[in-house]
Amino acid sequence: MHDTAPIEIARKRKLYQGIRCNALKIALPYGWAETIVDSFELTAVPRAPAWLVGATNLNGRIVPVIDLSLLRITDDASLARRSAAAQENRRLLVGALDRDGVKERIALIFNGLPQQLEQHVDHGAAVAGPSLIEGFVEVAGGERYGTVNVERLFFELSAAIEKSQ
Picture (cartoon, rainbow, N blue to C red):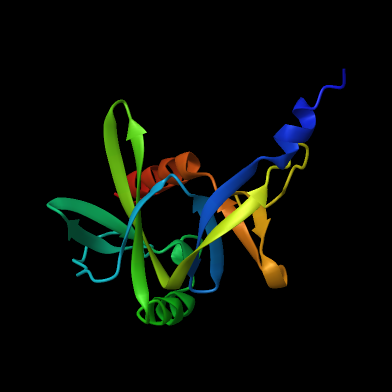
């Protein structure tokens, strides 16, 4: 009898929520996203890093709003251009990470409409990329979205906020 388990594993698919943060195309695990918010108000956060573009009230919870396209930029002119570009057709993708029974939420600001992305799982391929990117999903037309490790994202954002204080 032939073992078909490896073939079945190779056929498993992962679903992602694909969003564009300005020119940055990212894919987040589909189960991570809780909601998409079309209309929101931003409140400024004093002494915050540039990528923490504000906070918003979602059903009585104050949620930090992050622009991932600004995360690695230090040049002030580039920051201004990218911040202005983020103002058009913006929405929030809100997700949470469960830490010791407490849900920590963040909202990622993005442009346009999200899309469902699907990828065959490749267990053997190692992919190099920025520290938050652990792989890529390629969609029709050859576009590539970087898959984000949300646990690492939360860790890096928390560390950066502590460092800036």
